Image (cartoon, rainbow, N blue to C red; front, side):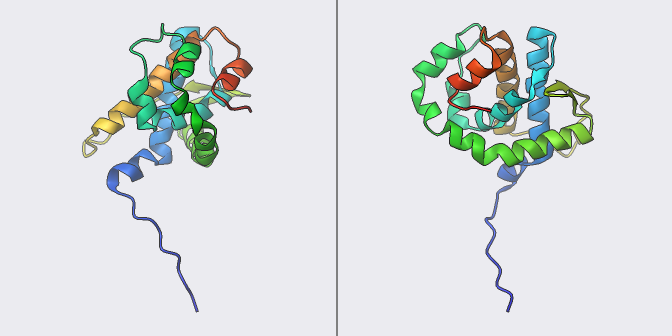
Length: 166
């Protein structure tokens, strides 16, 4: 007897936001933002912070208007956003890894040992009509990449400030 477990039904927007191709584009935008501020490739560990941050609407809504704001000060001022952040990182780790793999396979990302750079993005299909959430996620991902780039702390300290470790 074959008993199937019912699969959750995802609406179109949710399935788009959690698609490895879209998530690879988010990491591409973050990498491009990081490179813009540092002229260096983004550490791959930061890529695992992008999706739990950019896909989380309360985090996006709480972002400051400029990367000149202190990331550490913002984190201290928004402790509720960090309460479940480590769990979000763990839950989205497989999706982040799939997005990185997809991005590297399709040249959306390029990499060297421990680092990622923005690759080439093709034109989006004419049939794709971005929603507000879709565009907000892209904007937030690029913001986080730039913010990580202007942060005056090293990689380990940045991860610790976010409440996670490699």
